[in-house]
Image 1 (cartoon, rainbow, N blue to C red):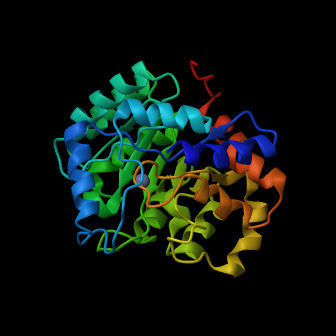
Image 2: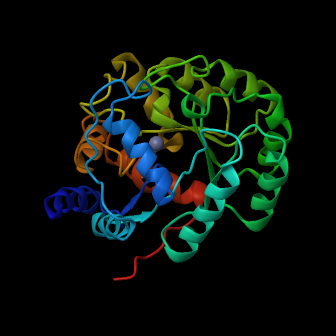
Length: 294
Ligand SMILES: [Zn+2]
């Protein structure tokens, strides 16, 4: 794995950055992590293809590797696949972020009657970022059980990473429709649309253009592993320089971490664009990075 470090560091050093700000990293409780790995390993129906996980290390080793890469701040992005587990995931994620200074305090929610109360408590406590995953959770963003949750989050401005798009495999709950309906009702929500909305790239890009607080994360897009990003949309990413955020999906990626960065560089949108995407936008949206203990 040490071979993976040097190209990552030379990328941000070459841009004159103090490191990377990655808004799409996962750390899950060991039992849940094992279940997620098993789904990827089996290339199950929600994955659809072989997906060899490159960074299948212990939590301590993964934190050390992110530090070696120079990733100065990252979330843990839990997500629930059924009712009744969000509170457990959220407790674990809170403890993790208390132990690891670079980790953003992350949480999730699920359409369930308790959601409004636990989300309000988390926001009051200072949670920094949420994640929801429609394909895995099999719910619509505008599920009526989430009405109060969205009201709280629109008022607090807490960023929510939303995997709503249909990659890698869609189902009845994926696609832009429920995000569009949600934003019509809650236009000031701070959403980070994962995977640039791929494969519904144009629709999700349009939402980032139309709504002030809607962002996109680069997670796995622009790599050789993902379907090509439509070339005709690339020029519009220049105007969205302040709304595109580096995301990687570490550790569940089938290639070296640096490949995500190469994919961004070969868009050829300039060093200022890369500096905004890989550092400045994350720092502005989610707060200053933390200097790693050495
Ligand atoms: Zn992810």
